[in-house]
Image (cartoon, rainbow, N blue to C red; front, side, top):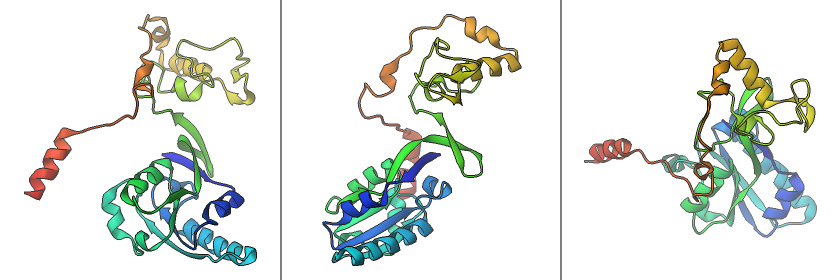
Length: 229
């Protein structure tokens, strides 16, 4: 899941200050799970903005709404309020949702209320850790299911650096060395031979150097076209 945290409130107030009518729009997927962007959070933020507006003497009207996902056009049909009637939309979605809604609402500014941090998994109550970098060239088959791009502070692909100490990263003693985790996992699986294999240089162009990435599934498009017919 994508993990995000709310921006500092003062920053949010500064963003909406130029507008008189704002719609706080929640997202019911990833950011709801980490308690930063669901319907309840949208309602709370809207109330906080109304109060801040009165204290600062701003002419600010704020409503809130929430849809299942802001990254799929089909769910925009479930909006209770029409965003076109607002001066700006304050999105409680990840950066993907903000970017997508900006395209859906070309005439309305869509502002980010959250800082998108990483792709993570819940490891304890209220705790998420980064597990994937979305690099476009997955190596988990030979690293024991542990991503060196996300779990190593330097994204090293050929083993631990000289800064690792007793299984901890030199960045912080509270942080496990990604490559130590990989070694221990492969040892448990009896697959340490994976680390002895010669592999070709990594193709980093699949990460970001090739520009904006896109995934296209022709069979899904064909099914949708057949259903429409």
